[in-house]
Length: 476
Image (cartoon, rainbow, N blue to C red; front, side, top):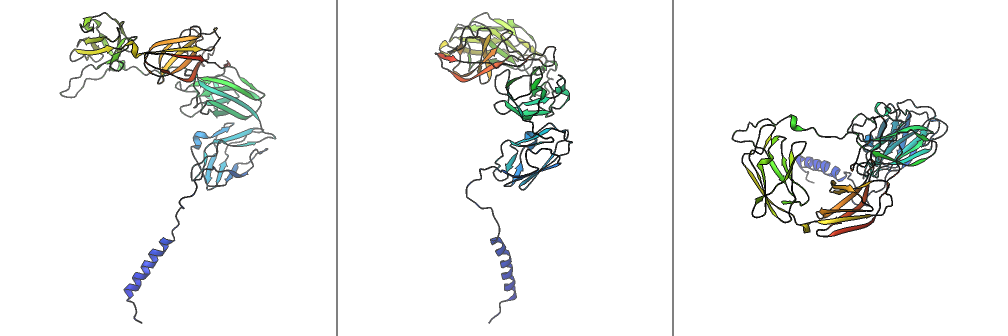
């Protein structure tokens, strides 16, 4: 038999070496049903709900591979330890190593929320908790409640609700809470496995994660008196609010420097605010400025009416920020107008004026462009002053008291509106914030947000009947 050349034998061996291993590569199977089930616990050491607990390590085994997702945001340990435990996940196991000294005769809760999830599809175990006691029994008392944003009447879903053994007012700014819980999407909160005792309750929309009230930009809620817990408590309502309004600093103190661009002449930027190129019948004409004004001369503003363009008088008003002026006039419907602004009618803080006179032509709206909204409330309470707040796209447009059981508002553009009811305790017609760090604490005024939407059609009296609202009892 004729032998194969050596080089052919070598080539054949190389081909076999490279080709056959590729045929044996392991690949993930395709197809089949999607994994929709979360992992479940198969073993714990020590067991959940252990008594006389004295271990430094907790081992949790699951039926499938797991991973931790957003643990730092979801983890709640109560009572709050001085040093956080160490959490390590590997394959199907999770270990928790405890560094803090455990308090005697105390029930501990490790609440991991939805942080434990399957590694394939990310299906989380809902509200995972591990409980143990260093004493001979598990504490079992509960506190249930809700946090509502006082100014809107809507649930506060981002608050941390905290319990303190120290009931002094300043504790919320100096110490970590002993227990705390986070609100759910509906603003509700739940404390479980609490001992008998007296607690200070305080809620905080924390911005820096330190669980201490040290920033006026953080909304708070409180109950002035300590809460005695000797049985399960439910129905607590906390009203969250900002103690101080966050007002942006005025740019008036820092005038814009002159432009250094060659060939370009800077001028005062002026804009006339209209409703779709038309003027509302029930509102003043607003002229806005990009920079704060130093001075303005209303005699150099001319308002002309009708096709004959005869001048008409108006009432002039400048806002406190010096960035807009209003021209109030009793507009005639569907009428042409012309606004003439002299080049020197206004000067901003850097000395800029208009480069030339400006003329703005516009037309007033017709009555048929508007709709009327009438609300009839089913309430017999006449002891309080209630104010209807009408919103469009989360912007309050009108606010006025309910007269009897009826509220009516005209001059509304077609659209879908929201309604909130203010319980105006001091009868000043506006919402008032509360006060925690002041002599004689004060709760904020309450607002009820009606969940219905109210559609307004043009040239139509839109009536809604049998509307209801209520306000929860707030503990002082």
